Amino acid sequence: MNYNLPIEFLWGTFCRRGIVDSRTGTASMIDIIPGLRIASQIDAKTLALDHPQMLNIPFGNVAAFALFGRTNQNPSERQEKIAESLIVDFSIPGSGSQSSEIPILIEPEQDSTFVIFAFENASVSVPFEEGFYKQLFEVDYKLKEFDLGKINLPVYITVGKE
Image (cartoon, one colour):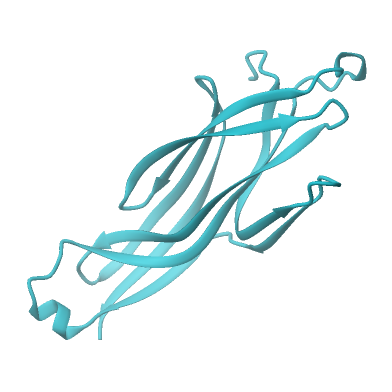
């Protein structure tokens, strides 16, 4: 349901890095990530100390890569560019949710545009104890108060003792 919005979410995924050629509008996704499996060890020294409640596990750089298109594809009504502000809500496991506003622009001659939201040195937090944890890294795209779409990255973490 588009609520007469000028754009719609077409698809999205996670990758390590995304590149959009500013001249042609073509895109490249480097190392698409369908999900992450992370193994971490708790060492004996850390266990002997006054250990923290949560264990922070880094998993590097990640980019949320999404394609947005015009809702109206009628060529006679495409004389104007679409310039909006997307609200990007993202939830990082163990770190809570945050929100950011990013511009989106679709020129009159374009049908769609890519949006890349990069997370540098991303990490997840899990309880400081042995076990298997499943977390969900989520990115939710909104225009005004309307949900456009969401992408999810499952993160599986195994924590063991050395």
